Length: 79
Image 1 (cartoon, rainbow, N blue to C red):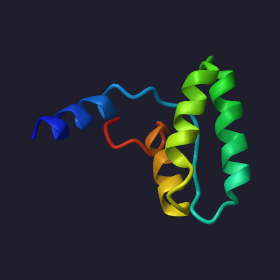
Image 2 (cartoon, helix red, strand yellow):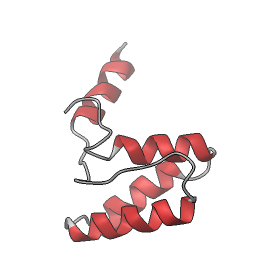
Image 3 (cartoon, rainbow, N blue to C red):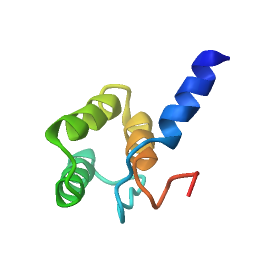
Image 4 (cartoon, rainbow, N blue to C red):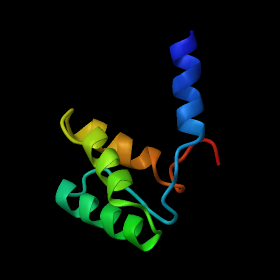
């Protein structure tokens, strides 16, 4: 229960990219490049960008899309 509450709290405090639209079916390299460009434009640090990309990569395409969408204000559930 504590872990679930902690995870929900982390998601609520998550820094979001403004104007990032992640479309299912897009090439991962393109999505990664767009994410990086938007993050740099919005003054994210290299560490913040690397943290998101490390979280996104490795568990398949659906996870990749899901993680990137969770950092997008256009897809975020807690607007």
